Amino acid sequence: MNLFSEQTGVTIPKFNINMIFEKFTELQNSIVTLSSHDGPIAEAHVILLAAGVVIFLGVAGEAFFKKTGIPDVAFLMILGVVIGPVFGLIQPEAVIQVVPYFAALALIIIMFDGGLNLDIKHVIKTAHFSVTLAVLGFILSVVMITLAAHFALGWLWLESILLGSIVGGSSSAIVFGLVRNVKISEETKSMLSFESALTDILATIIAFILFEAVLAGHFDLQTLQETIGRAIVVGLVLGFGVGIPWMYISTKLGNAQHAYMLTLGVLFVLFFLANSFGESGALTALVFGLMIGNKAHLAKILRFKLPRVEMDDPTHNQLTFLVRSFFFVFVGLMASFGQIEYMIFGVLITVAVYYGRIFVGKITLTKRFSLLDRAVTNSMIPRGLAAAVLATYPITMGLPNAEAYPQLVFFIILSSVIITTIGLAKSKKIPPPESVEGGFVKPPDDPKDGTSEESEKMPDILIEENVEGGFVKKESDNSKEEN
Image (cartoon, rainbow, N blue to C red; front, top):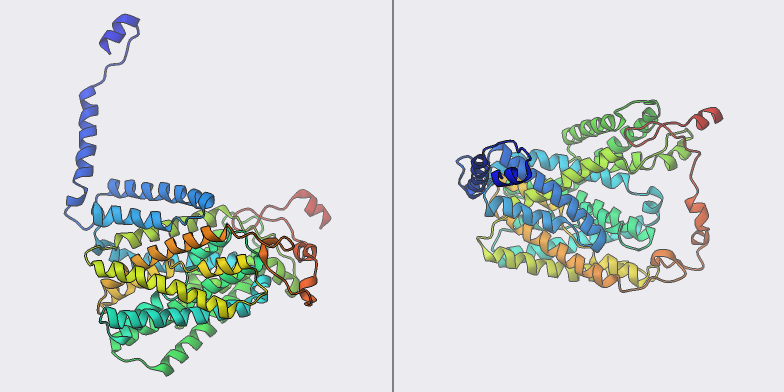
């Protein structure tokens, strides 16, 4: 640089080049010594670096998912493996302390998001298919996994049933994202979304019952029935009881700057009340989200005006993205590759669940559904957030084989995502019927199905433009004059 200054006559400010090399060496040493820190977690600046990488990979994975249809879950879980077991930035004992709190947040945010994105009219239309798929698929998966865990791993029956319940249903967090990017009918999208939400709720309720049963050492069928019944009643009462009044209250928020944060605060209070009355909070969050997401349709029934529902709320989308991304990384943090039998078990049982799904699809879906819709339905077996959340509880509760649950669930989630991706790739080669968009075959003799699509697309009510912040927009001057 001195030579350059002499030749050009340009004065270059002097600075210590050695300092740059020293800082670069310190950075190298920091990376080398990441796995040799004394505490269970690395220093703050290292964790912030890891968080930045998680966010970057989450955004890149989401963009990759939209382009290719390959879920970003696998990338996030592998990143968790790199941060945890490989480099040791975060030790498992630190994760165990944080996960129960973060798991509760992840569960209610994802279920709330699922309710927001469900169309209540399509849900009602395909509810019988969704419920049948959810119940039969969940039962068959639990039976297969229970038998495999008992005879292959040598676990007790209660522990085996618990594992089957944890991974018995498809993940709403993944399915909600997948169906938005697959060209199937709206009815099939609603059916698959509602089914995955139901299995998440089933898995959560039954798993919490079995946690107590494993601790007590016995299982009571009557207690199971009473607990499920109480959870359903509490979830519906709280979801509808608070959701409907909150729809009206939200119309009075007017120019409230933090409308979404108020809604989020109500959701957290509902989660507390649901837990106090014996419900996990999953069903309550789903129903509450369903109420908020279907304001327009419900306002017509209740005969009062509501502001426009803005489904693409930036605050909610960003929060949901962060929660999903970081929790799947947490799943990778708890992974362990010490026992190869867990990996073999996870892969084989996922393949068995896939063939079980095909069997359930054949006996559930009628000729009303096209080949494309059925192929996509048969491929939808991804396990994800609910399974990952529930797999952490045996460790915090001190259950037998507690360390095995996150490891088994890790391989099952990864295998199921890969199988789903392959299945969806094959489904894309199936052309939808030309006469019906998305491939949903409607029976010609059904007068209800003969209604025009234009009437379905017409808004239920005259919707006002309202506040920003939350799910609504500012009211325009024209609309004020009209009113």
